[in-house]
Length: 136
Length: 136
Image 1 (cartoon, each protein chain N blue to C red):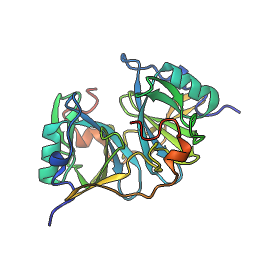
Image 2: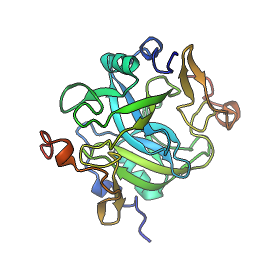
Image 3: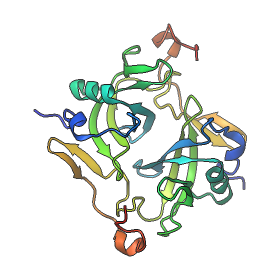
């Protein structure tokens, strides 16, 4: 069966920068999980595996989401914006998204006193990321 | 009463580029509406009015969402990512978001045959944007 993401590189000319930003959203709950950049390699690996890959700014290379944590994300729908230069990837996540232990990287909320943590932790980052925990 | 967004410029140092990307999400439904960039002027105008302002790439200036269409968006929650360099703005939209007539700019979905329009139009862009309709 042809998956909806298997022909993504064919149908998506990249912007001149070589990167396209992608909002990653949990398909079932609608929660916004993170905002990442994809390049040609990330698009091709996503198309080949059906799992989210993106350019990791700290590691400066394309990574599979979950390659360190096991918290991979299956891409169930790919959407494109009106100008054709941004993606919305609707995913089914296995485990949390944020390396700090949260479901979403957007776990802080603005209050009159500043930023507060608004979400509960869903995993222990020291257990899941022993090599990189708290190195950033 | 102090609104949760009224002190946003104070609590948000901008990245060196002067711009911070912001995912705009409908607070009630969870729909991702658009992905925009905010600069200092946009943050200050958001903080002053409680309505979404952003840097419009085609107009090359900060605009109030809805200043041409009347489709403004009230910001009800401001979230920040783990690295402190991306925003998630949860809004209550009045009317559609996309200048092409859709609730969300991400109205196209990838199929094996390419991109298809997946959402219904919620307004007539020729009626709402008479000066700019179909100029882009």
